Image: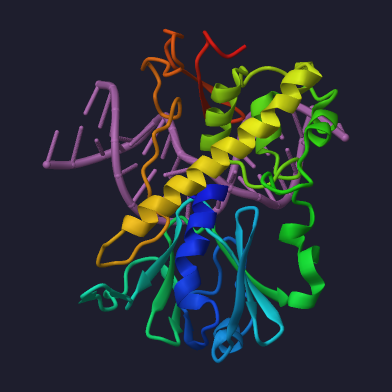
Length: 283
DNA sequence: ACACGACCCTGTTCGC
DNA sequence: TGCGAACAGGGTCGTG
């Protein structure tokens, strides 16, 4: 679920129930997720107002009136469930506490935001807002792919000379922020690049051409997430759910969807993770 | 500096 | 139907 487009979709879903609202009560049900949770976390959140809800890479950042920022990472299985929100003529109540509900925020206005994460690869932390991106989890992250700092010149220079497969290079969060296993497969398919190709062995022209492809794939995914989110009506108020029409991801053995290609989608394992690609149109 | 594997943890799916 | 293996969209760490 959570690569950059999903995290952005979750952020947008949380905006109406969190931004500008006070946290009436925070409940913290365990001492750690991927890392130890901050000391006195519930007390530091309770009574704070959420001044703004930002995203950096795959992190959601809530700037609080206390001068601290709440950092949230969804890991592999993290979700932010919203309940207690009026939707049209209907009103859904808070569901019974579920397994893996680790943090519960009761918001001013009646909404409840529940962080649920079965695998606990997610993370939460509190840090001084004034310290900015100095947080160790944010410090080394590369440019936002949809931002101005991510240019063709930048990507070409960062890929030059690298022997690592282009698939692994694009997953490197210090090179570019927010790409994950699904979207890298989709991006390389759209760009016609074999995921196994050494990053430094792409011509500058082809390496640079990845930039507009990355931007387009992410923008379309965010748009799709947003549209399905607008249509979303379900009692548990789960956010971050949307269906994709993946061109290659999880389609091993199926026909390549590039018009006129006629190839068959293959799967290879690279650094322990599946890559899906078409051997015919990706070189 | 880089590349790779192991590891973190739970749930679901697949093959026998 | 049971049961173990494999796998899952995240990242970190240690090793060679």
